[in-house]
Length: 333
Image (cartoon, rainbow, N blue to C red):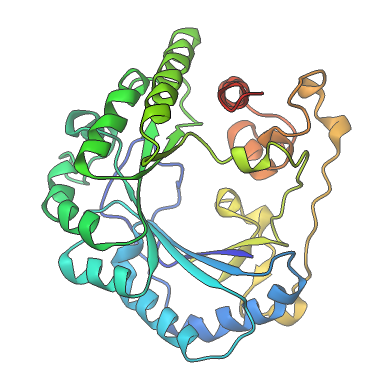
């Protein structure tokens, strides 16, 4: 089971491609921890999963590090039957000092730092609230993080304006010492066109050729390789995946959390919570019929991402469709 906890909706940055629109200055209160654990106890036995994966989200989650510390301390002190418990955090890296880095490593928290590539590319979209690029804020403690945190990765978000530098950005991060790099496009960028898609194709296959000769580096272009042989997998939102907002409201996933109509309940009223199972109606995927990737495409299972992109559960945007096709071709299908 995957549980994303939004420990804050505050952020010290102002990235122009951020899909989280409801920013604020609220932190999740430590008093919520007991209710979250009660919620886990209720839904975990019904989830189709042997283990528990807890992700700390924001905003910038390190702005509420005290909550994260208390939550993990509390979990360590109980004897829940959760299988293997994993923790992760996605951070912009600006608040990673040595004390924080040591804490993340000591507690085996998987850490993903959002770095879009070499400084000029990174600073293009990822700016502090004062308008300055954020690279210099990350640089000071990056080497220590790379040498200390056992499970550390870089997350590159690329857009139609930075895609032509994707390969060079990967090489830059490899030279800095990253062994795990995850690549994600800005799905909501309205400027993707034939030229930028062709550039993405060229960058992908340069990266693929590089990876063939450098097996010690793990470069992931998406989340789909594990599903290629499984066929259609339905949306697990409200069953295998959950997101808890900073106010304690329960949502199916991270993409749905901005929409009040998708609220499933509250951690403070779990007795009335009912497990949800989404059954995809493939007949409604009219634009996708006839595609060779119909039953494995992410648009057939990630319905809330579809909704965030197009306003409909069974319709995606044009870029995402072409991107998915490229993903499967990249993986040999």
